[in-house]
Image 1 (spheres, rainbow, N blue to C red):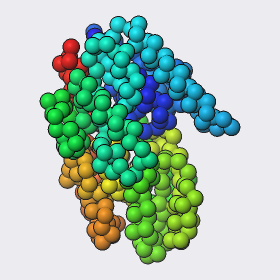
Image 2 (spheres, rainbow, N blue to C red):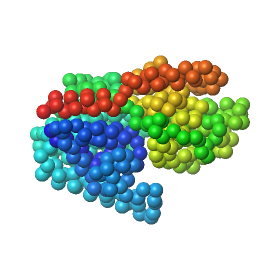
Image 3 (spheres, one colour):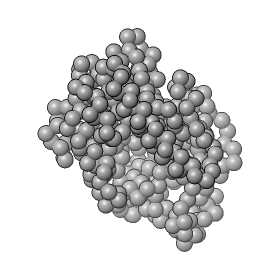
Image 4 (spheres, helix red, strand yellow):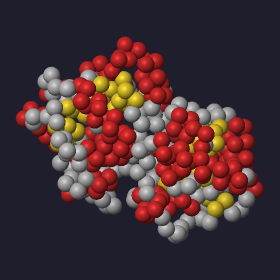
Length: 369
């Protein structure tokens, strides 16, 4: 069986859950007997391709920026797309698994089956967060055409059915897993505050970063030793800097690029706790990452997060300041509770593995042939 993947996620992301997911399943599926993997990509700036040695040479511009870079990356993305279409015409694959929602390849796969992974329904549920509905429209077309659809959680499956109940028979739930290995990578904190709260990833509107900052500010007035570390997600915007200044937190919040798993392990392992205030997530890999590193988690009780975190997370309502402050204070002041959540997190983590993800994914591929 030949499984074909494409360039999309690896052209979109330097880091991120989607390209992390595809890297993990591609690496493991390629090692299975009787299965061949084709990944169509010529140019990329994705970090996780290092885990796929046969494709690692295509990474460009790591840790470098220069005038015109964005334009050149758009050109490279177009080249990847054209190459993908050419290869679809000549490649003798059995199953196609696109890595995002571009519909332009549909005329070229003929009648061969394809499997689509739906990572979330954020564009459908919160259209006001996005400038246009291109992704929503493309995803709808792909879900109608797909042979099978992988939803990354029961929560995402239910969200899909809320909008498209007619495709229920195509849906299968396959969880993500954790990729961090603290046993290999853990090290003492270097250049980090002694006592900090960790925030990881993008700070887009639905990630609820401003809510978190505004409602945690009072705790910094009570404890001069407390800081916040934001990992990844790009440098602070001007509006974020202004907010931090208004709250007198500009010297208490640090941004760390966190470009390697070693750095992420270090950040989780040394944090007092990890806060995940998002109003919507299709899955929520950072919860599992925190579990693996023994970091207690405070998360919103929205969408898929309780499904992933189970009883190993302290929760709050992401729209309710009092709920957040009560949960935050309780966890900050109760070391026994933090210790209990660490232990429960390690136990909860056993329910998720990339091996399980791959087994279920292979079963789906076989079902469409």
